[in-house]
Image (cartoon, rainbow, N blue to C red; front, side, top):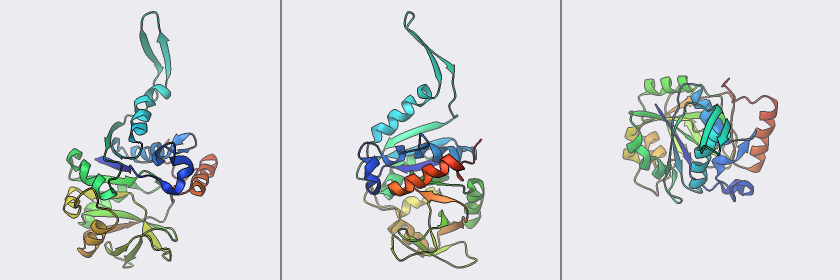
Length: 257
């Protein structure tokens, strides 16, 4: 199963970092948050990634181009014009970086890469949030739900889209984005999605969190997987410092060995 990561936004709320690099390359513990997200998925055996780039996409390409070289011990023999890896320590990842357009909205980015998704179902997340959500159980839950998309519902007050959920219901009954008064359960990303969501996305100007998710909720095709464990996005410099401090102590999202 492929993992699609939305990594093309401007990251304006953390402009102290994103004036020089795309938000997914902002580092926590010396590694880009994008790397942390990929490590979470690969802990569950999901190692085939499609990264939807946009703003400063070339920097994401360059990072992965040099990743094996930077992570390994290397011998350069200039006399013979050779380079040998003495200690090669890289994950068994397959990474496809697609420039989905600097001004393309989240829904448009998804629509642009659907022809590269081989299976009927794929994982989808944002390039700025980490969690200890059980990905394997999330996939199982989605397949049992019969919905086109399943989001991970997490607890975080304010700023994000609030969900109207029945206490024992799988389905989202309503979805509204970014109300400052909201509390309770919110959309934490970490989706599992069927290719049929294509019917809900018009084009590049479509915002995934608006009409597509609202329409799927009205049609009973948007499910919610409740996750009461750790979740934290990196929306601001303060969020980055929270994650940095956690990494130095005992990072809850580090589920890999």
